Image (tube, rainbow, N blue to C red; front, side):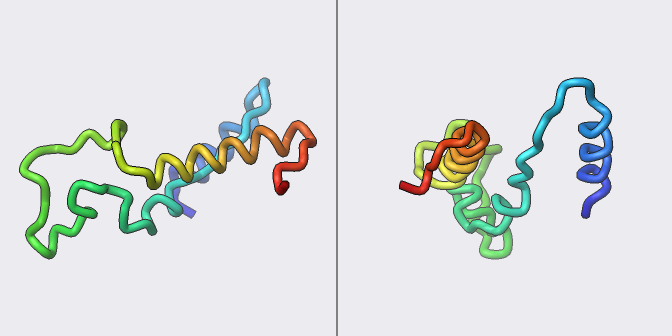
Length: 84
């Protein structure tokens, strides 16, 4: 586990208000559509000419997966069945 994740886990356990960390780093890094401009492939010489604004993607993909995970966590923590 990366050092930053260990630190986050330790800090979150000591917080007065309980928090849950949904770590989506590995999930996002494994998806080829993680950076839709050119799929992040520098080896192919397809890098974008300028920095891309990854927080405002127009394509369905990684942010939709994050939303689905968050939705599932919130609804299931309330005791509701989300599998139907």
